[in-house]
Structures are given as structure tokens and as C-alpha cells.
Length: 476
Image (cartoon, rainbow, N blue to C red; front, top):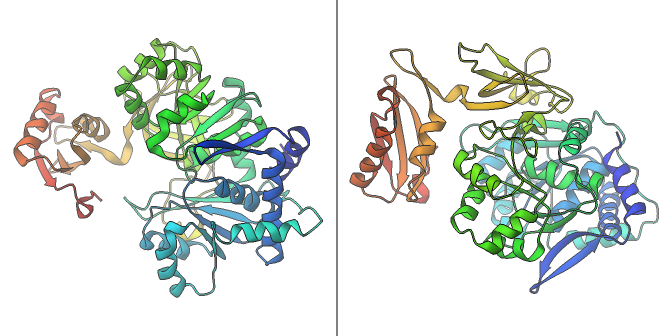
């Protein structure tokens, strides 16, 4: 396996003048070649190394952009450890992140200036770089240096630290090495062979492992071109315009496309060689619709702790009920299955993180053998098909010994378009729902009653709590 810097330097020789990253500017697409992108990556690295950031943790707190990708490759390939975080996180979430690991510098976008102002007072030792204002100067500084920076060759050194979401629990720090990050490539390529002839349209957040690894990092191997979404409001129009061959999506966007389907959009979707859909359960009826219409929709299942993909549908597989076929390079097992074969999914392999950082040692999802206990429940067939059944920690055991998977109930409740969020939990051994909506209490209760009619009595919602759809009404 090559390292990130080795791949980049090889790409510069192979695909020098080929377009690599395309961005929208002034109503048209601007192409940045492999040579231009890699040159900027190395210039940033030289400037950062000169300023003493070698082997340091450098945080990215910014929206999707070409500059984000430049920093991502530069830090991981040549400088130290990249720490991408959600730009929508509050100062509280960012403060926790900085308390878990030492951060030497933060690269932030203009939209994050207020957070910088607050955090800079608490962390005067940190360096702060505006992506819009300071990054061009770093590139110019690096261009003046003749020698190419030395790449990071240690595959076992932490290249990336990702954090789980801070909205439902204390964020956990997940270190990933270059070996972790590249471990699944060969299996993914055998199943869905992406090449330099492909182009991807990218709109999901870069700081997620799903996009950052499968949709961005792996382009240094495949040579695939990246077209960056300029605005989510323009997603459909831009997809129709660029006609990509590879797209990573999530069920939410799949449902939106389903609702507004036109002959033109369907033709564009049929043109996509690999339409990956991950991050959550995909409605089986919607999945069946796309596949029957000739769209190569491939459901994926993965976690941050496993460097993204654990299971992926095989193109042409008639089994639409499964959530993918486990990767052959991983040891995936079901722990303590019940009489129906349902148990916790555990994963072992080179893509699996070595475990949460020491400061998060109270968590025990990684066992002594290095296997990651996902907390997801599923069934694994003899053919490797994985069928997800919900979350172990989100299962309600009723008073009469029945298991209720709350994901199923939440999915049904969220079918009402005016219900913005829902959390189902246990109260007195029965399912209870907390709902965020601007519907009246009577309308919410009427909808829950309709949902209950679809369920056996032990699964029915017994109690409802209603919150207005306001910033203060978010379910936590």
C-alpha cells in the first residue's frame, strides 16, 4: 500500500493536466488540474512545516470547498494529523473537542468568525487561520520554497481524528491511520471499479468519514474527477448539468429525488455507474423503485470507527431486503444472536480504529481482540448479506419480554412531513415518543394513532410529548 503523499506524487506524474477538482464560479465550472491541486497541497505543507506544525493536530472547521480538500491532503500527507469537525457545532462542542486532544491550529471559514472570537480567548496558545484570508498567503509562501516536502511514510501513525456527533452524547475521538483509511480500497474497487474516467458530484459534508474517505480520499487512487456542489438548493440542477458517474448520497436526498422525479432526472440517475446510499436505513419501496428503473443504487452500511464501509450491496444483486454484503477483507460477526439470528454486529479488520483516545477510556465499544462492537443489531446470512434491525442501545424490552426497535417506530412517525424530529424511548416498559412539530397537539395525536394502527399492541406508542419546532425545541 502506498501512502497519501506517494499517491499524490504519482498522480502528479500520471495525470498532470487532467481536470481533478471542478468548482462553480460566476455561473460556470472552473477546472483545477491534478498538477495545480497537488502543487497547492505541497505548498501549504511546506509553509505549515516551516511554521513548526510537524506532527501536530490541526483542526478544520469549515464548509465544503476546494480549499478544505487542499488542507485535508496537505495535513494528512505531509504535516501531521487532520481533525475535521462539523462547522455547525457550537462553541460547547468545539471546546470539548479541544479538551480531548491538543490542537495546535484551527483553519476556519468566515462563517466561523464568532466562534473563533470566543474560543481564541480561552485558547490563546492556538494559531488561527482563515481559509478565505490566510490560506492564499500560505500557498504563496510555500511556492517560494524549492524543495518538495517529505511525505509521512508511517502507515501506523494517526492521520485523521474524527469525532462522533455532539448532539446526542459527549463526542468521542476516533483516531484513524493511513492503513485504516486505505484498507477497504481493494475490496471496494473489486465491487465497484472506479477509474480516472469517472466523475463524482460531491455534496455531503466532507468532515464525515463516508464522504471524506470514499468520495475524496480514494480519488488519489482512482484518479476520479470531483465536481463540488456549490449550493444544496442547486443540487438537482447541477447533477443534471455535470452528469456524474459516481455519487454518494443518503436516504434523505434519495427521497427528495423520488418526490420530484422527472424523465430528465431519471435519465441522469441511470447514467450514474455507482449511486451509493448510506448513513441510515433506506426505505425498501423507494430502493426497489430506483433499481427497477435501471438505477445502480447500492445501499452501504458503515461507521466512523471502521473507516466507513462495512457492507455494500453488490451491483445486480436481487436481494433488496438486505443492507449490503459484508466486505470480504473484514471479519464481521453477530454477537449472541437470539433465536431469530438477531445480535450485535461486531467488526474486526485493518480498517478498524485501534480505539477511542485515552481521554474517552470510559467507553468500551472495542474489545481486547481489537474488534469494534457497533451497537447495531442485525442478521448475517451465510452469503454475507447483512440485515440491520436497529440499535442495541435503542431497543425497548417490554414488560412481557417483547423487543421493540425504536428506529422502526421513529421512521413511521417521521413519514408525516410536518414532524421535524422524533425520539422514541422507554417509559414504564412501553414506547414513548417526544415529537418536534408545529402541528397542533390534536394533529400529532391523530398521526400517532394512525401509526399505532399499523403496529401490534406491544409496539404502540403509549405516551406523547410535543415540542414546538423552534431552535429551543430540538430533541436532545
